Image (cartoon, rainbow, N blue to C red; front, side, top):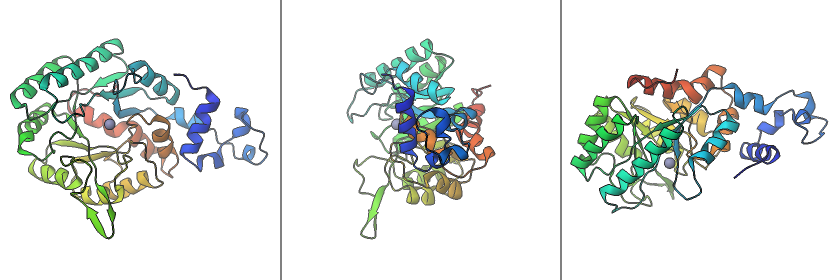
Length: 309
Ligand SMILES: [Zn+2]
């Protein structure tokens, strides 16, 4: 799939209304609007200015989502490294399905070792096999765990896995969600999937394992992000990524306000343009953008000795 620059530009500006206000669109040859030219704001210069680690992306979730397609997006947005995984969505998948999935990550990583950071996936229900699989994947250079909703993150089945990840000093990226409040009620147990991890589940496990590194996935994933930020606020070992295809205004600055500028990661969850532009669209300092795009996640990688130079 190719997207020409004009299409890319219009997608980007559409996903972050407001950015266009300051864009020096004359120079980009898209229009000769007389007012915009006086602002001297070059959006692509801003996009390319920051080093970026995208800490939540997937390959081969469909036949179209090849590693090369992800790199094509990344190249155009100045994303140096992509943390890739391939979670299994079926509830009853056998352990072998997780192994096969991890092998697809290992293969992609081998093909593009300078661009991909690989995460393994597993179902903790297969405890012994999963612990062996972690060893195998770490030996192949993978860094971190991505898990889905076969088991809640605070299920005792997860304890040995979490302890292993603590030993490795690697982060656990868990799919997460909190239903939108309706009629004055939080739909805390009303999520779409019964074993989906809620903010309360994260808090429970963060209290039990304060040394675990936990990543609450995609604040832009369609859940009640205001509630999520408030619920996670007091647990410094829970980090959030702001990826996802839902891009209401204020997600990024709200997360910073509640969690602080050191616990927020840039990520796309494969919604690339939106995820870069929503950070640029917020009024942050240069230093805050550097932290969110790159430094915060690199600090996590550093703990396990896998940081990007
Ligand atoms: Zn995802």
